[in-house]
Amino acid sequence: MARLTGKSDGFTIVEVAVTLVVIGIFMVVILSMQAQVSQISVLSAQHNKASLLAYNNMRRYANDSAPSWFKCNTASSNTRYEVTRTTGNVDGLPGMVRQQVYASAPYGCKSGTVSLGMPIKVESIVEYGLPSSGIGSGKKVVHATYVAF
Image 1 (cartoon, rainbow, N blue to C red):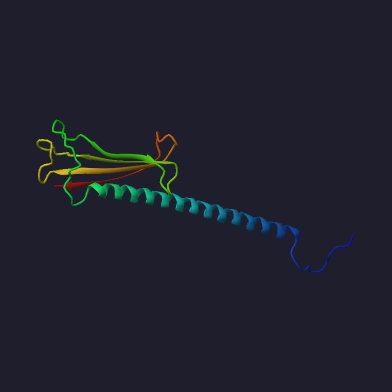
Image 2 (image 1 turned 120 degrees about the vertical axis):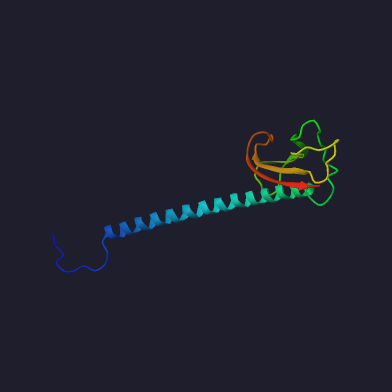
């Protein structure tokens, strides 16, 4: 067999194979990072949509108008009153979406009405990603505020 005694031009098979393996590993890492970033982006957009929904629900009741919708319980000072509850599909959110708004008078009230200057706590909860029955647990977003009247 003849031996090559001179300097050879080009790359050997081993060098080409190692280079291709390294390039393949980098491609897999880059593609998996891109997939994770895309998934995080979708989850962030869903959370943002649920947060806006909860905030808007809260602001329907916590505004400059008198709280004629609020029924104060004089027997117990921190009883939560369910103002609204809906369950259904919302565009941009996965699964069933449950929206709830609660109100309470943590410092009490007089004779079934809110007294001047006493705060009302308005709490809006949006749960999304629920099973089709609407019962269970999913991701939750809560907005709350105190409103004095």
